[in-house]
Structure formats: C-alpha cells, structure tokens
Image (cartoon, rainbow, N blue to C red):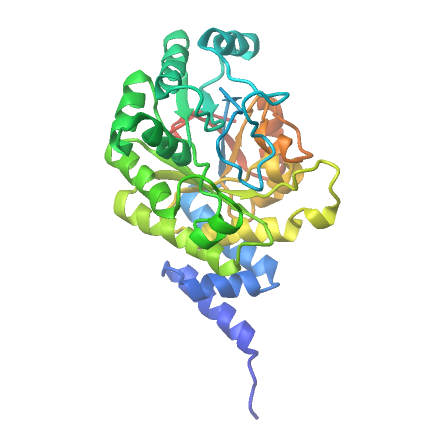
Length: 367
C-alpha cells in the first residue's frame, strides 16, 4: 500500500521544519508562503517565532505624530498628503507655530515625537535642522524620531552635504533616530511605475547603513498592496532589509504598511483584505529572523485586526499617536490615535501582556 503525500503539504512541512530548527527561509520559501492559502499554519509558525523572541509581551509607546510641512516636490502616486506651494491646504509651520501645536496637545507621558513630512524645496536644509533643535530645546526629555531615509536623501541634495554630513548635523540638533518611511517597495521597477520621485533602493538602504554606522537605531517599513508590486518584490524587499540587518544590526522593528486607497469612500475592493494583512505580518516575522519586532500598525489595518495580528507574529502595537495625517489623507477609516488605556485594553484582549516602552524598547511599565 502506498501513501501519496500532497506536494503542497510536503513543502509546508519542510518550511515548518526550518522554522523549528531556526534555519533561515529563502526567497522560494517566502513566495510559497505568499501563494499558500493556509493562513492558520503560517500564522502559527509566526506566532511560535514571536513567542520565542518576545514571549507574550506586546510593546507600545506614548507618542505624538508631527508634520512640519505638507509641501512636497515628489508626486508619488499613492500619496494624498502632499501639496504644491500655494495650494489650498498647503502649509509650512514655523518653529513657534510647531511649539504652539505641541503645547496644545502635549502631556507629560509623551516619550516620542514621530516626525515626517513633505520634501519642501522652498525652505533650506537649515529649516529642518532648526525645527528639530526647537523641539529638543523645549522638550528635552522627549525622544525625537524624525525624517525618513528619503527625506535625508532630499536634504543631501538641497544642502550639498553627504548622507553622513546631513545626519551628523541633525544629530547635533537633537535627532535620536530615523523613522522607517520612504521604503515603499524596495524595487526600482516599482518605484518607476508608481512615480516614487525620491530616494531609490540603494539610497534608502545607504541612508540607514550610514545612520547605523553613526550609532543610530532606526525603523523600517514596507508599503504593500498596490496592483503594481509583485509578491517576489515584497520578499526581495524583506531580504534587502535582512541583509542590511546582518551587516549593521541597526534596525529595531519592521513595519508592514497596508496601502490606503486615496479616497475614504473607496469600497472594500480597493482595500487590502484582512487575509492579506495577516499573511504579510506573519511572513514578515518568518522572513526577518534577525529583527526583534514586527509592528501591527492599527492606523492602516484597524484596531481589531491589530489585536488578531498579535497572534500572527506582531509584538508591537505602535502608540498613542495623538493625530495621524498621512494615512488618513489617503483614505484610512481607522481612529487617528488611541489612548494608553485603549492600547492596554487592545493588547490584553489578545491574551498578551502590555508593555509601555520608550523609543528603544526599554521597558517603562508592564501592565
């Protein structure tokens, strides 16, 4: 009597064995997982890896998102936040205006300013330096997580400084870490098709490499869900980051970002499915074996799916934010912020242990 084993089951068993033994997954493994509809098995493997790395702890931070300007020279096709100078709704905050905004929303529990914005060529590099310095001087106890790698490349162009020179100038003004944005999909084919008029793949990676060499721990993202990127490009994106992490060990967390449909009234066919969001978080956890944390970003996937993602490999539920603008400009239907109590409730509801952290994953309080 012969027993025929389904080749798909056999392939999944091979991947399970690799995960159990801590053997690194390949491009082919990642593609197989993306093409599989066995979401629960993929999720179980990711959960197993996360529990080995982080136990049942799930991290969050009290932070505030800030946007100095929405004027931008780039015309990325997925962005509804950017404006041209003089457009209705365009703005560039002065230092005093920004401090006034922060003071209106600030409370002593806030540990981090998360700062991104447009690539505004109408102001000099010094404007961006002075903005950081003003915040650092007024709120010296708050960590400044500012600018994407794409913004650093832009600052390099308008200042004539190298990436290292730009970063050293910003660090002297009070910068503590870089945000993860600007990665989109790390494929020059994708970037050309989506009119990503900013740092290319090599530049994005080189900015983070340079930041790590200067002692900064940084964050990194992947904006997935367009009809343009391929599944292979998503896996290649993860492998680029994994290879840089092997080299520098400077990334703290990987943040998969579900693409928003530009229009808040867009139907569900224009949005990522929950299946796709969970699968991407789980595969990220399995592919990025040298990253400590994978983030579930409630702004893009919603609070309830974030809760489920905590058993699909995610160990970070982001933070309070106060008022998010970029994803909401692009049609996000989620809350633009959560309170500390809501984050604690969300994490506990998934059977996990909420841990309030600082920017660098030092534990402040376990709930």
